Image (cartoon, rainbow, N blue to C red; front, side, top):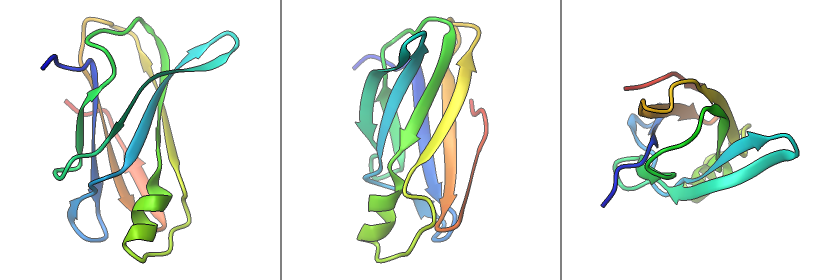
Length: 113
């Protein structure tokens, strides 16, 4: 299997466990709007290691995480039905890891390695 240029990992900080089964959509910003690049779903470890192609061009990208269905399946009310993380790829040769920490009423992200 090929390695994706962009990967992600979601941790549910409310439970202290990986968030499995969360759908994520990777999009690239273009002059006319956003273009879908790839789609994935977190595995049992909360990871998507194949979100996108082996390489992407420099530019602005976003990942939209569908967190509402994840919390609904757990019977947990949430304030955020989805989370969008927008980031810039400046050096296309690098790998970009975009982790997400979620709880029902808060989220945070950072540039991972």
